[in-house]
Image (tube, rainbow, N blue to C red; front, side, top):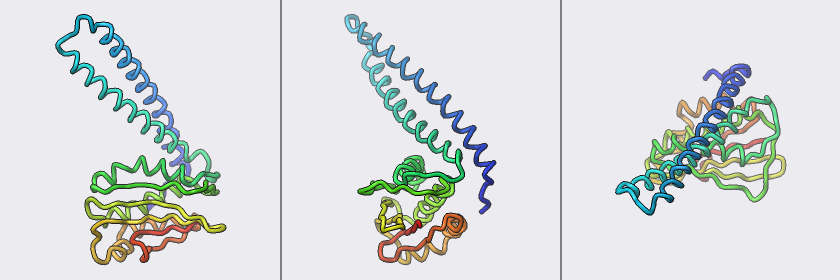
Length: 216
């Protein structure tokens, strides 16, 4: 696995950040236009069109999709700013939750539920945000590779002194040798290439099927 150079990552981040700003402007215009159409339909209730109900349903769909688009665009914009600094202080749950939301499509395609649990306390760490997110996504990929349909990957956090553990717990009708299959996969090999630069210990968690990342 060839890890992109910092300048290459910064380039992609800059273009993505600029594009998401434009996408937000487009969604804002669609939202304003659909709002105006709703107002016009309310005004015309005294002489309703036979298609008024269909118009209302269509506008409701537009509003919901705009809301979804704004949420994804905001998250993508936040992600695009990750390369702004090679090393920075991040709030672990906030960074992880943003990545999980952007990664939902990978889980959906495998018919797997991907969830994340907020810890009882904020966990702030100094790290390379891009490489950490690469490690988190690689861990998700390892689990998804072996997960059966209708399973669940649950991400949780545990802080113990100077160390923080990130648990990727897999649930469902798991095949025999699930953890062995994970640690023998190409995705596992890719994960192993990312973590040394971050001083992360990676374990195939036998006590709870899945993966354990230990961050110093």
